[in-house]
Image (cartoon, rainbow, N blue to C red; front, side, top):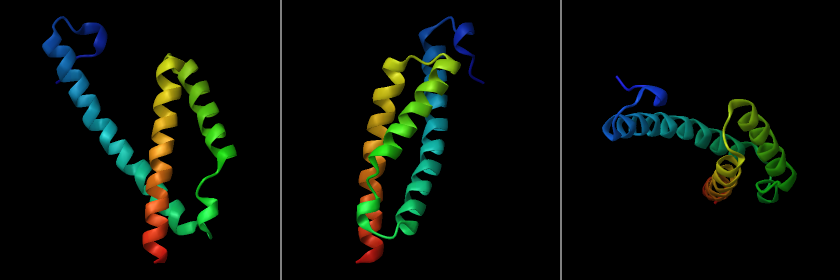
Length: 100
């Protein structure tokens, strides 16, 4: 059982918590990737894959949630922008694979 961050007394406890959280994050990212696959299936043309207004909408919502939750915007924004970038690349790949 991992300890919450405020109860950690050793680096081993910190690392165990980070490792457990990373496993959970991977599972959440698998679900997010599934949504990208669904988007690739649903979008009628390749030009619809990259949607700049949607990107800014997502980042704006993430930053609002980060502020409420106490996550630094200096962590949240670049992490989500990279996540979105890679998800779009994956969506392009899936879109191409399903149409060729």
